[in-house]
Amino acid sequence: MLPIDGTGPAAVGSDRAALTERVEAALRRVLQIRVPVVLLDPGVLPETTFKARRVVDERTRRA
Image (cartoon, rainbow, N blue to C red; front, top):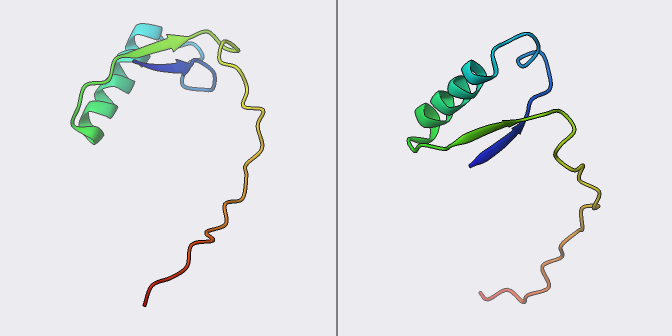
């Protein structure tokens, strides 16, 4: 299941069921698998609050 926050111009004034079907069809066309989509109300998904961390590869290289 893929939750989608229903904000933005695509969700304004359009039928929620039609939007859900269009997203499912696009994902099926691109990924070649079926992904159930649930259109959520705006603001339901929490904001990401963590900071990215730098990863340093300290392994020794083999020749």
